[in-house]
Image (cartoon, rainbow, N blue to C red; front, top):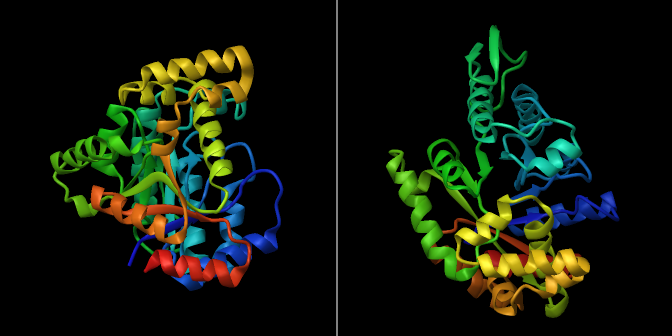
Length: 331
């Protein structure tokens, strides 16, 4: 049985009834998780509350919420409540985001993201475990011993962390229940996963202790070129417009020339030029688009490489046909 995750739209046009229908179809078909991203569109937690009431088995989580715009205690409150509403099906997805979003959307100073992530995880875990909140960190200093005024459904909710820098990867391997990577071209699967799992083992943990989400999108679609164009546009946007983290990530993997070409093209000609500057081979290596059978092969290849949870998208609009495709992918 393949472990699959789907997402729902957090920006642009929106129809709540369609979102609920999509979640129910995935739930009934055996998809393991539904994960909602949050940036500067709709907030993830409101939608999760709705879907917690409308589904029964599928895990629900974020990918990601940032660690600056909410306190760790607020995140613990939110997810303890959502876990209660869902009957213990939540997964917390956290990430630092970057200076562009944190400073110019949320108006907060982007500083000490690694330290803040560690303290976030520790405080959330304390509150869910009903430990008195006496915490003496470098960022958070909490002295009054607060506990949540209700008993959490679970003493621990899995926390998955988005990380790409070497230090953040080491911390994720040590503290988190899951890793949320981004932009790993197929030739990088083995070196990146070998490196990460060696960090997990160096922390005294088993590989099975940590989920690793597959960032290589798997899309069941007949419109291959449109999906690949969207993939190229998204990667170029992150390289050129989302600060230096993603640019440096591509550079560390050996794609510095390609990343520099994207930045130059975007500066000279805008988003279309930036996307066009990405080599086709690299775009092909970032995702799989095709029939359900082709996508099954890609998921199995990624599982063999070491990914444990696979993001999929099915563009079929008919609910019955979409259900059948999910069933084929789940196996």
